[in-house]
Length: 251
Image (cartoon, one colour):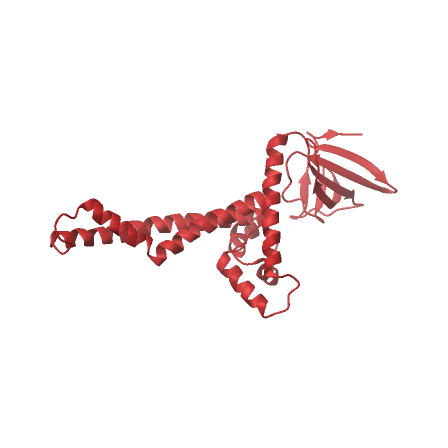
């Protein structure tokens, strides 16, 4: 079911503003993957459409120019290169050319936003519609604040990727400790665990934990996760499976 939501329904829902997704219900979508696929498909569709439109429109414009030159309508001395240059300018000024080019650009931006920031940004036209409706209703967040948060999230994502590149591929470091009667597990990792978001349940080998919080710290393993052991757990599609075979245990 998670595969269906993430890779089939998720890329379509990722085109919508986050407020609309919450209203529709998004099931068990991994938004980073859905947003990445959605941006990739949008950019690919724009490139394919732009290619077909170029072959169709440029062929028509060049043929019309050559025919006019042959009939003498353009005067003497007109070359094929000049006809092609004028046709290219006309092609570039077409509204459909701009629309398809925008799809390519937005697809790349949305794909990078999902890859680096882990956020599935919706398409801009629908975002503008959502912003326009937001003017006429009371909202806890202003559109400017939402945009500022998205930019900050994107910057944090880029920073995290740079930290991952510097850290290399080190095994996770585990630290078990007691807080009263409860057992706490802290995990330090060199790579960010994209799906680890509180309050997810994580099955660590044969035991179940609830992810309470996570953060970014310094050191060779900058990504930090704090989990609290549960008395019992129930297997399910939303439970994260984690194996400690290659991890390093710190006292």
